[in-house]
Amino acid sequence: MSEPSNPSRRRWLRRTIGVGLLGLTATAFAIDFDWLFDAPAPQIEVSERARRLHRSAIVIDLHADALLWRRDLRRRNRHGHVDFPRLREGGVDAQAITLASLWPIGLNAIRNRWPPRTWTRPWERVRYQMERLAHMLEGRDDVALVRTAAELRANAARGVISLFHGIEGAHALPDGDLSKLDWLAEHGVLFVAPVHLEDNAYGHHGGGDPERGLTELGRRLIDRMNELGLLVDTAHAGSRTLQEAVRRSAFPPINSHTGVKAVRDHWRNISDDDIRAIAARDGVIGIMFGGMALDHPRIDEILAHMQHVIDLVGDRYVALGSDWDGWIRPAVDPAGLPQLTEAMVRRGWSEARIRRILGENVLRVWESRDRLLAARRSGHPPAPRPEK
Ligand SMILES: [Zn+2]
Image (cartoon, rainbow, N blue to C red):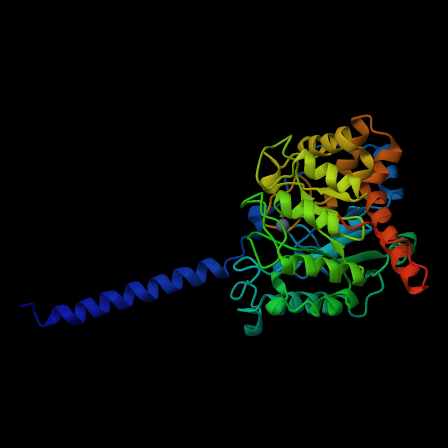
């Protein structure tokens, strides 16, 4: 027999603990922890030679999840990485604004106050991020969404920053609805990665079974992307998924953000066979600036990964794939990017090589796609590639 006061005391205790836990959870979600990912203070002095080279080069970065955060990209933020002022400060001519939509990192319901329609639906998270960017671009003529490499080059020549989208994981397409790809292609999306951090209906990710490739739906995804001119992004894909996607792609493939296994043996990084496969299709590999790909976020480590790709297949296949704002601490943020060029100069790399890595390689891939699309439209498509 318990005292009459005990049940009410237990209820009170349960309620207090419940409210406390709820409060703690809400606080954890509500706190801005952007500062955890801030780039370190500048590490190396940038010479006048490197500064001139950096400024005259076309600089393109293939991956930034800048829209996952609550920050307004129109103003310079104290934390995080990508915003328009810092892109300008660091001489970035074009930035991929990638769209991650996996639970939980893509949700941001409480901390970032995303609308309820995004809470359970990845497709709505993609749409919402694109809408947010479109809103931030309203009435501006110094930053613009581009669809072709020619637009990018024209913007770079007149000092306008170009943005373009990539989709991080085809799970974003609701119920495998490939018709959504048409809409994406029309709205500034250049590339689609079949998988993100987990296996999905399209393929298998790098942290899983490397022997599992594209699914039947994954093959249909790439066939439709080939029709629309969407590039395949093999970032996050397991080795077999990567190899099959690269072979099936009608355009040079990209890997928007990765490191290489030969420098750091980690599931997030790609093997020499994967590098050769992308190079064999004249694609390009964006090297990350931090996160799981690197041991430490250091400029010399970024260069070590680039050097390996250069030694293996050549400097034609290396690009910048920072993964800024992707829950990583990068060696440099956009404003600090000239340090990377300085480090390349100090390594004795030629100006031609540095320009290729900073942006020309990405432009080559993009222009190759644009030419193929134009040829198709004119009714003179080049001979179809043999199916493997
Ligand atoms: Zn990623």
